[in-house]
Image 1 (cartoon, helix red, strand yellow):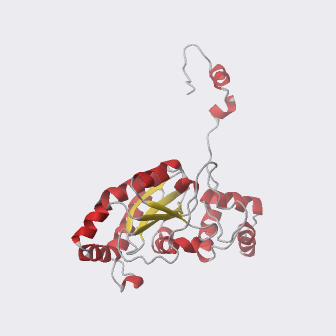
Image 2: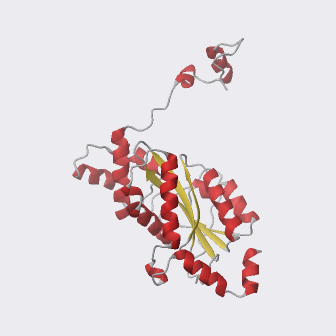
Image 3: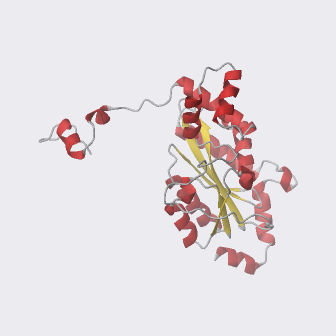
Amino acid sequence: MVERDHPDLSIGQQCALLQVPRSSFYYTPQGETDHNLALMRLIDVQFLDTPFFGVRQMTWHLRNEDHAVNEKRIRRLMRLMGLMPIYQKPNTSRPAKGHKTYPYLLRGLQVKRPNQVWCVDITYLPMRRGFLYLVAIMDWHTRMVLSWRISNTLDADFCVEALNEAIYRFGPPDIMNSDQGSQFTSFACTDRLRRSGIRISMDGKGRYLDNIFIERLWRTLKYECVYLHAWETGSQARAGVRTWMEFYNHRRPHKALGGRPPAVVYSLTAEAMQPDQQEQIRA
């Protein structure tokens, strides 16, 4: 909004009119230091093994590993990474102000076919010189990843893009399950689900086990792909994740599926359904 070469107004005058400090115009974000990026990777690895570690436990763990850190830094980094421990405490999973939450609909539900239930979640991706966020939508019955997107921010836009792609390619599910994060409680996301006739289900606070299948996906992805590379750019990260997702869906044997890949089970199950059932799902 501020023009460096404005013919009539100086930068200071433009900032005054916009009620923006002039220092903000000249400020260039520096990003995280190498030390903080290294700590974020250590936190991410440990959190996969102990998702119940809060700020205090994570701080103690890193100190035991000879890292000089305090709770203030670890709290900031965990918040930046979007990590939340599974135990319940006040205000931990509260969505953004004004966002509506929905009840958990999967308790006791028997999921017997593709597109009956989808689940969605976001994870942090460490890079050599920064970090990104990955959202994925998974079919609950077959564990197939239907769509995914990578972003450098935690806004809702990349989540809605992934949702649009999944609905376009596979048709809407009966139920979509997520956590209570602000991306999934946002109007943009919930309105898209409601307009498609999809029932909305959300995990309880501190209940990461309510979305356990996609949590297992993150663990597998990180140990088999992310931690084996040190990506420099977003394009490298997207290419790496794309290659692994293709492998996971089409070639990686899955124990819960009798050793078959998720995409194979998805296709076989969909073909075995009655034509009227398939037409009902497409509708």
